[in-house]
Length: 126
Image 1 (cartoon, one colour):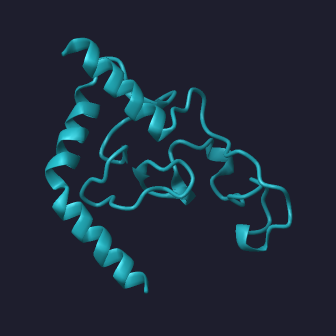
Image 2 (image 1 turned 60 degrees about the vertical axis):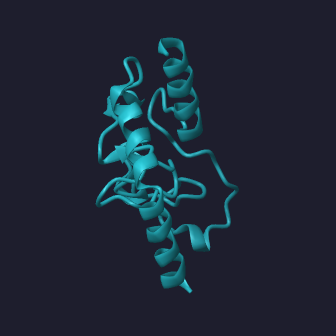
């Protein structure tokens, strides 16, 4: 089952490669929006769009990056924590605690907000 999903993702990425590249250029060329969170620049290792080597979005922040265990949009103190309650000593699949919002770094911009900001900015300059 998983390989079918992976195969479908690759096909979707290939079919939309031109659009993905254009969107990536928009993010890179944005004059004001350069960080997903304070001190965390948008780059090929922290992107709103799939890039070579990073075709799977982080479970927590949804940026295309190194994934949750080393996510650059989460405070480093929480990287080895349960991604449900953000405590240590257990994993999410055994967690009995209530869910908490991820401990994102200061000024974190969620991916959908980032797309809207860049779209708004591009309309101002077009």
